Amino acid sequence: MTATSPDAASPKDRLLEAVVESALAGGIADKSLRAIAEAAGTSHRMLIHHFGSKEGLLVEVIRAVEARQRALFAALEADPEEPAEDLGQAMWSRLRDPALAPQERLFFEVYGQALQGREWAKPLLPGVVEDWVAPLAALFTAAGQSPAQARVGARLGIAVTRGLLLDVLATGETAETDAAMALFLELINGRVTS
Image (cartoon, rainbow, N blue to C red; front, side, top):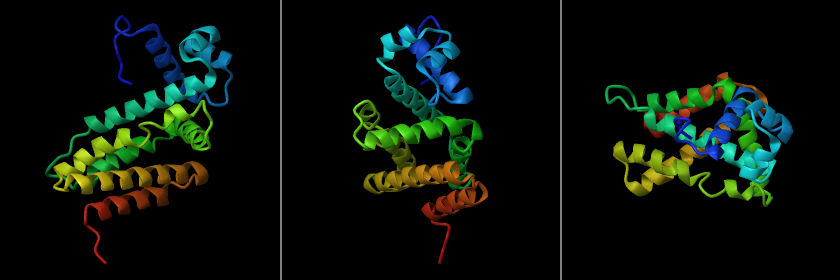
């Protein structure tokens, strides 16, 4: 979700923005709807009115944060003078920011619930992968890959990134996960030989 002027945003968008800020500041998964509403400067009734339930709100928060991350990715510009993996490393550094950990835990929690078939979480599934494939594939295509190869590489990049994020969240290990990402970036850029 991109920042909009307060006058241009709908009441629902303004509420979502306030909840997202609260989520990024301290997480919301373990908070009651009343506590989330209080932190966002609204009432739980307004959140229910706009999002239906706490669960519906969680899905919208995840979508909004994912949209922010894609916008940050889109804003990164590849420097033709620099190795291609520098762009991937910059995005990894942003995703690995400890401040995002509460939101990333929420993402994986709700993602898992969606995969278990929980009706409230299923709205997260459309686009959870595909929304990232297009921008990553565009980057790979610009680097000279065929469109089909670029899409496969994009899916691989998404899977590796999410897997390493899970690793960090589960183990707290940062040095080895950072090294694993660096190796992956070298591998996809053809810089590692056997």
